[in-house]
Length: 184
Image (cartoon, rainbow, N blue to C red; front, side, top):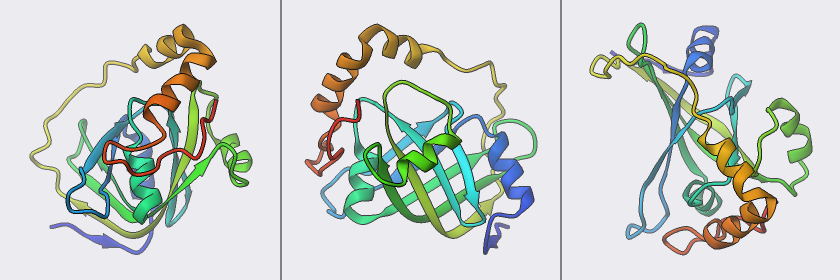
C-alpha cells in the first residue's frame, strides 16, 4: 500500500538520488492540448530542501514542459526503481521555470554540471509526495550514460543550438509560449 509523506525524508532522498532516469509530466490548461511526459537523465537533478527539487533543462526538440508550467504551474515528477527493491515515488506540485536570464539562475546553476545548451532550471515546489509499490516495473541493468547529446551539441555549436531553440523552443506543439528568448 502506498504512503503519503509531508516532506522528503532521508530514505526517499537516497532513493531519488540513486535513480538514473526520472520522468516529468505536464498538461496544458486546455482539454484539447497534448499531455506530455518526458524522460530525464544525466546528472541533472538536485534536491534543494524537504519540499523542493530542481532539474537542469537542456535544449531539446520541444518545449512542452516549460510551456505547460508557465501556463498553469502543474508538474509531477516520477522516479521508479529499475534495479533493486521495487518502488515508485511521485512528487506533485507547482513548477517554476528559471530561464538563463532570470535572477535566480546564477545562484542555482552553481549546483549543476556545465552542459551545452542549458535553457532553464525547472524547480518544483512539492505539495504532495507519494510512493507506490512498483511491483510491475521490470528489472533493467544500467549500462551507462549516452553521449549523443554532447556530440550533437558539439557538432551544431552555439549558433546551431540558438537556431534550434528559435525553431522549436519558443512555443509548444499546442501554440503555448515557451522560452522568453533563446538561452544561447
